[in-house]
Structures are given as C-alpha cells and as structure tokens.
Image 1: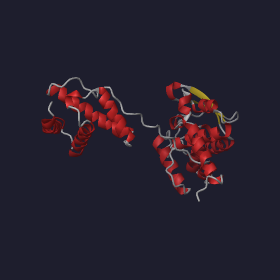
Image 2: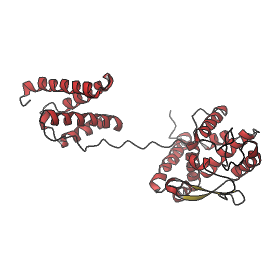
Image 3: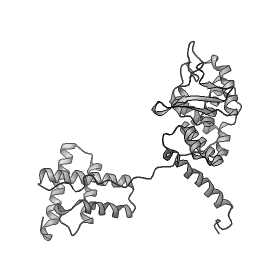
Image 4: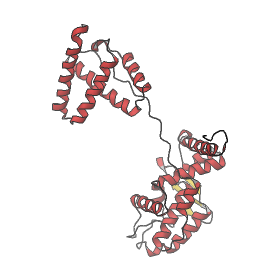
Length: 304
C-alpha cells in the first residue's frame, strides 16, 4: 500500500474484505452496505495522492469541509463520518493500522428547523365556529386555551377541576411544565368564554368522580392523541391546507405575541422556557412575516 501503482488494488481488496465482514457479522442490508461502499469511495476520491494509512484527522476535517461546501447536508455528512469511523476502526483492529483519524470529528450542526406557526388569519379561521354539543364545546375550549395561553399539550390534558389552578374570574391558569417548573399565564376573553361553556356541559361527558378538566368520549381524562386527532380534523373541516397539530397553536401564540409586543423576555416567561435562546427562534418567524409584507408591498421588491 506504500507504492502508488499497487495501492489501488490493495485498497480495493481491503474494502471487499471489510464489506464482507459487515455483511456476515452485522448482517447489514444490501442498501446499507452500498452506502458504506460509497462513503469509502468518496474517502479515496478525496485522498487520491495520499496513502490510506497516512490519513490524519486534519485530512478528515478538510474532507468534511469540502463535502459540506459541495452541498452535502449535515445529516448526510454525519452518516459518511460514521462509515469512515467504522472503516478505520476495522483497519486498526484487523490490519494493524494506527489510531482512527475520524474519531471525534463531527459533522456541522444542522440548522434548527423553524417551528411552524399559523398566520393570524388562519388561526381565526380555525377557531371560528358556533358548533354545539359537548364534544364541540370541549374542543373549542381546549383549542382556545392552547392558543390563548401558549400551553403545551401535556399541560393542557393535565388540568383538573376544582383545584384553583384555572381561575376564570382572574383570567389566568397555572400549569406545571418541563422540569416541574410552575408558571401562571393569562387566559384571554375568547378562551374564558369557551371554557365557561364547556364547564357547564362537562357533566354530560365526565364519568362520576373524574377530576380531569378535559375528558374523552368515555368520560375519563382525554389523551394527547385524541386532542391531536380532533384538532387535525377541525383544521381539515375549516379548509386549512397545512396539517395542524396542538404544538402549532403554542408556536402561533408565541409568534403572534412577539409580533405585537416585541418583548422577547415576556414571551420566554409565558412559554416557560428555561433559556431565552429557545425563545429566540420566534424572532426568525417574526422576521419572515415582515419579509413577506416587504415583498408584497415595496415597489422595489416586486418582480417585474
């Protein structure tokens, strides 16, 4: 493997031995074996003038940078690096190669996806309606409360009656979120109205002795899955094109409050985020909304 002329066939034999070992020892699927083979081929193509055993961590870092610059996604790069680490580990164990040069090298972090939020208009469309019946009243109360107060789904379904945590007279609700942190948040007028209507009708659904504020068709505490299914069904019936889930109402709450108030710290407190860096993602949503307004209204932004 030291000489330039015999390096390629020797390397090819090593790759065949390695893939055979993966196939028989780990019983990997053909598609996965193909991914390993392609990753190793990329490694060779990026180090054509370098002996395999002389590749160092700096070479691996440069290779990752080259692949990233060519447009490979962080997730794909992570898989490639994993394949390289496995390859060098096998060479070290079975062929006497030195320490693994890919060990400890990580792919670039993937950009954090922006949370999906409804527009104000879509939210109004979703929550509009005057359906009657206990199930419809319950659904409206749940969804109004999620949007009004930015609750997590788990916080919503954990609410009980008669414990003083929901105070409609004062217009506030106290919930326990992640890390057992308790916070009190406002409840808007629309949500208070919907909650009063539901509480008046709750006895029609609730089983005797059930303390949960929101109950399912069998009278027991409603499950998160049922809340999600009911919201998705409502969104379809309202003609919303996008798939709507309960956490989207929390995202919409945060985005809309931030757009109106520009007070990031207040939104952090309302959401119960331990770190403001978690809340800052909503500033990007706010910027996107401003960018859309700019593109639609500014004379110089319009495409000819």
